[in-house]
Length: 239
Image (cartoon, rainbow, N blue to C red; front, side, top):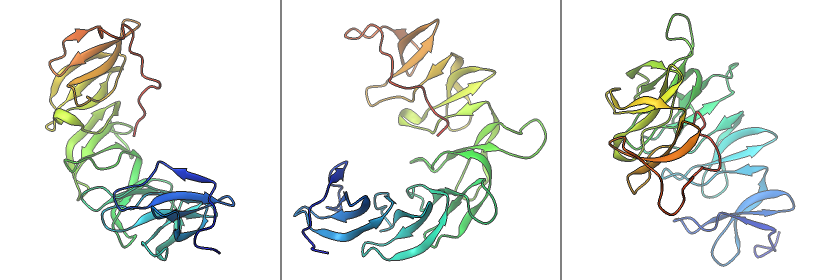
């Protein structure tokens, strides 16, 4: 096809590598800042490129990894595949006869076998929140693992968000949300019905007593001066 053929949609603009996802004839590819196709539109779905030069690409409801030439590095065999984290691992599921969550390396092989019911991506600190399978009192509970798949924080939480700014992660315990540090210790006790992780300004939105309020990292509550009822558009998900 013509390298400068018209495209129908550009998704999220240009990234640091100078490429943008674009759609043509219901297929996705990448264009450069001149609007020319660098990778022709032939995929059903595309992710953005990670630092290792790989991007998710989907064909016929299966996800694999392509390089910057659009060639398959890992053939499409997963049901779902996330972007690589800073530690070089990407969350994946739906390959090898299981729908459990695990983490792959750049070769597409399991670095951490798929054995979790749910999982978050690895955060900047190298931890990932995961939901344990199996038996016993830890079944269905969330904890945090490192890049080797070893438990850093045992699975004792109902749900957990990833660690964000200020080294805190939202965690739910006995139906209430609070914030823990990287040792699994409560910094803000679980007393909220819902939370978000902290933003750059040192504030987050918490839901308690039927109201969305602001909390700082010390757990002090306040009503936002410019927005008395700062409801986020959606409630937090597991990942």
